[in-house]
Figure: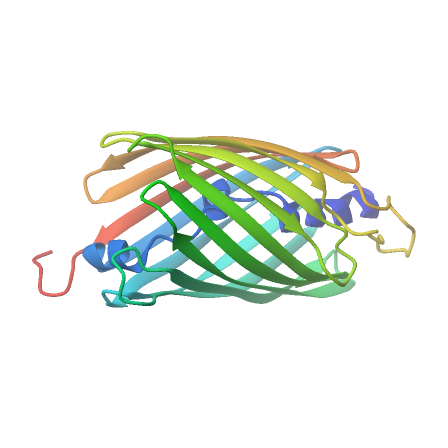
Length: 277
């Protein structure tokens, strides 16, 4: 596979929805406290135009410290064509204030490294921080900042999002991200619908806009400045005993590179402290 397509493939993974559920803000700390501890396992497989593909997986533990604070830690691995990387992940969420609908602060950090072929090593660093506030029983707003330093891509990506609960089961959300500094050149619009029933859940959404920097391939040749990313994803989830399963299909296209990914995630609700196994 040509080096330019490999580099664009990396850009798709940075800006695309590798795991669509991750686009939602973290669950409120109080909700996680009711479960006390969770183990989230995921695996994915993908195809990339040009005859190559890849896959990966992750494992994350999430647990509550208090009724208002949640922490998480885990690791992830991803491979596409002859590129692969591994990263450790830490996260946290904290409800602040005394109001019943408390604002939530959250952070998430991915730190690792990888290789493209045998000759080009790169670092993988992604830091996310934000606040999620409920304005009314139906309306919530989100402010988020991402710092991206992955191979030759670097910069900040602030985002503003709005969520509206149409019905008790249906949540509609939209967000806009605009890069500042660095070479990301990103302006992403995202729309999404989430349905949460007692026995079945579902999600669907789309992302579009300029999403990659003027990426250089391994030989220093310009692939294409400012390509436009288009993405669509759908998913379905179902609880089974102590576990919750989520299957997500995702299609992403940028700079002529097309990537299709299928992700299966399983959340295991671990027994709370003092509860029988």
